[in-house]
Image (tube, rainbow, N blue to C red; front, side, top):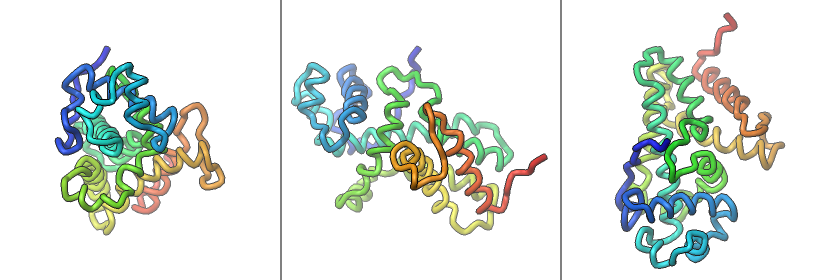
Length: 230
């Protein structure tokens, strides 16, 4: 059963909010599947319209171009992970336990409650891993940052940084570590699947346990909070 969640994103990312109409939701759903299938470079609105059995004009009513669509999807994922962290850490007072839950959520967000009918979170996660950086590794990043297009990533990073500071108040680089572990989670899944000599973790059948363990090792070693054997 689908759940009634509407992810709030910067209005500048779209011309019309796709979450408000059945056609818009179909654009989200089919664009995720198509980008995952053929890659962002080969993706365009003509191919998307064909897959949807619709018209290019209908897609352009929602998004100015494919870059804005990708940025929308990436922002949606950032906000989704932020939402999951908020839900999973509700009433969790122990700071170490809270940070462990956050790490697990970063790694396994795609497996968590995949019940929004127009978003396949598992496929979106693959898209984020392989294509996500293309949304902000661009020449326009500074201008888009001024327009607030990355606020969802900043919100997510702030959540993680707050948890790091709660555990280790004197740690001087909470935001650096926050963004690093998010990127590490995605990069090392990608490396394990495609460039295995760049990592020491293994991923098989979407089991990311080794990635989770690696992140915990790095984070708690750096914070001098290694897990006790007892």
